[in-house]
Length: 130
Image (tube, rainbow, N blue to C red; front, side):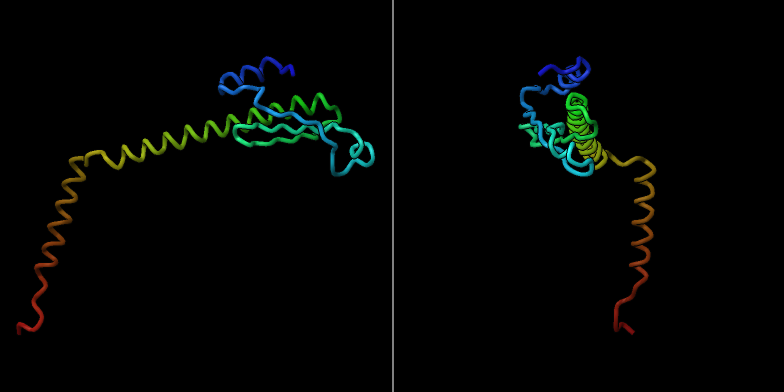
């Protein structure tokens, strides 16, 4: 299994081993008549560690479908890795926002609202004092 250099570089960046991918050539489905149903030009790739499966039947040529399927698999794995990094970054940012100190202005506004609330509560009288 020889992959183009660009795909090999993408897999190396993702720290993924192309040998962990099971490659199968299966018969096509859908419109196209007898030719598409008899030839095994569809490429199905299964990445074993993640369970991610990609099928490509876009071209008539098996080799073109194979290259496109590998590109699709690399795209999906990159987007999955990017999503994990983004969610970790968002979690760190949310934690930072949750634990940061209040600014001087926030403290002043908070004290003003507390005073207003206390004044409002103090204006209430006891029930039945009259």
